[in-house]
Amino acid sequence: MIKDFKYFAPKTLKEALTLLDKYRDENKVIAGGQSLLILMRHGLVAPEYLINIKGISELDYIKSDVKEGLKIGALTTHRTIEKSPVMKNGYSVLAEMEQKLASIQTRNWGTIGGNLCHADPAGDPMPVLIALKATLKIASSNGERTMAAEDFCLDYFETALEPDELLTEIQIPPVPPYTGTAYTKFNIIENDTPTVGVAVSITLASKDGNCQDARIVLGAAAPKPIRAQKAEEILRGKKLTDSLLKEAGEIASTECEPISDIHASAEYRQELVRVLVKRVAKEALDRAQQY
Amino acid sequence: MSEELRLTVNGQPYQIYVKPKTLLVEVLRKHLGLTGTKRSCDSGSCGACTVVLNGMAVKSCSILALQADGAEVITIEGLANGDKLHPLQRAFLDYGAYQCGFCTAGMLASAKAFLDENPNPTEQQIRECIDGNICRCTGYNSIIRAITAVVNGDYKEEK
Image 1 (cartoon, each protein chain N blue to C red):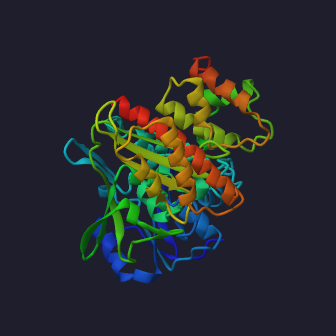
Image 2 (cartoon, rainbow over the protein chains, first blue to last red):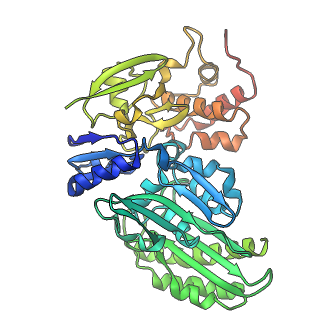
Image 3 (cartoon, rainbow over the protein chains, first blue to last red):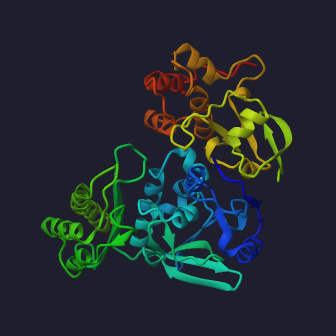
């Protein structure tokens, strides 16, 4: 049973920030609510004040610019991102991830910002955004700040947002030449949350050149999405061979710290990381070479 | 404290007062008596409560009613035009695309929203359009066949 709360539906960002400032500790923000309402129904979250930001249309946009990259308003729905033609300009991995994020109904109503702020370590968007070196724009009534996407999640369902802050925009820089990014998740039911999700981005020095930069991001393999930095390190500067990618998978599986739950044991998740990193890195490499 | 909610359901405008915690499915079933929409898993997993909101399939158990303020909702009761069934409804009947019928209202809402958006889908896309709807009688194949028949033009809208 959902506990009663006082409800606000601001229509502008400014109004929302004023409310957040006023009700700092007792508030909860709802966007699409596709995750939050489940928690509220189970009594795990019982806010005194619920601030519905879903109606703030100024935070629902996708802007694409050759120099500045991609800017996505926090209230853009998963389905809008998935269907946006702009994603073809180097961000198709985002559209692919969104298409398998959940059922159509959930993607129609749920927002990317809501997903990120829910901070489920098994969320799909965050690993992909970290791989794409995204930055998050955060606003409060005192001003704005930005932070790297990888610094946003602190722990299970915990973010770096202060109680009076709102995530407003996701910024993804232009994709460098000879870069390929891929994301794959393992799950029992198609379009369900991942048992383990892996995003890999690889930048080559030239079409057949050595690896210039690599990001390997693991979802549902730790209390928050994490980068497998030791595995990334062994790829940099090298010619990427199958055996090197296999080694990266082995190293990544030692860097993660998964838990056991009803979906999988910790050992099984580690094994998935080992296999998926190798596989997804290969796909990212193929894409980088086809650039 | 109740809040005012205005929404249009199946073409009919409503103005009602609800507690903020009221879910859209509760407004449809309890306040408006439109019990064709089913409430089942109550956790956004099964899709039985799917309705069409502003042209999109959504799960009415996972939306606060007040979030639908100003919206246009279509439920299973609004699919038919008077006593003329919607092409999807006729196809579902002909192809036996239901057994117990509990998932049917949600299946039809998903299929309607999807075909309105994409009238010429591939079979794979048809399968994907109902992947948020669970049928525990496992009658999926007949549902796919019924939607495919509508896509193929075997069922026109009756005037």
